Image (tube, rainbow, N blue to C red; front, side, top):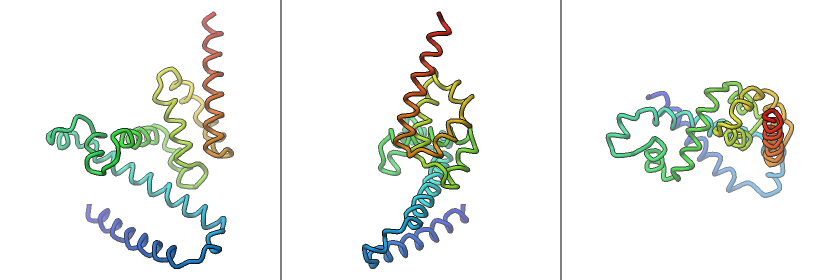
Length: 172
C-alpha cells in the first residue's frame, strides 16, 4: 500500500507542475497535436488505473456492507462524491477489461479510448448481444481503432441491428 500512496504523491506533484505550466503558457502553444494526443493517452491510462483501484476497493464487501452500503457502487459513490451510476460504470469497465485483457493494452497504447470501451460495455452487459460481442471482440476493437468514439458508437448501433436481423432470420 505504501508504494501506491507514494506513487500517488508523485502523481499529485506532477499534476501540480502541469497545472502551473498550463496557467503560464500562452494559448498558441496549445495547438500541438502531439501534446493533445499525449495528454489524452495519459488521462486514459490514469482512469484505467483508477478504475482498477476502485474495483479492488469494491471487492471488500465485508467492509462496505458493514458500514451500511448496499453495493460497491454505492460505497464508492459516497467516498468519491460521484454518482452511483458512474461508479457502476467504473466497475463494469474493470469487469470488461478483466474478461478481455488486451482491451486495456490498446487503451494504454492510445489505440482506443475509454469512450470506445464504454460503447462496447453497453452491449456486453446486455445478454442478448453478449455472446456475439464476445465472439467478435477482436474485430470490434479493430474497428474502434480506426473510428472516433462517436462514429464507433454509430457503427455499433448498426452492428446491433445486424445481430437482431440475423437472429430473426435464424428463428424463421
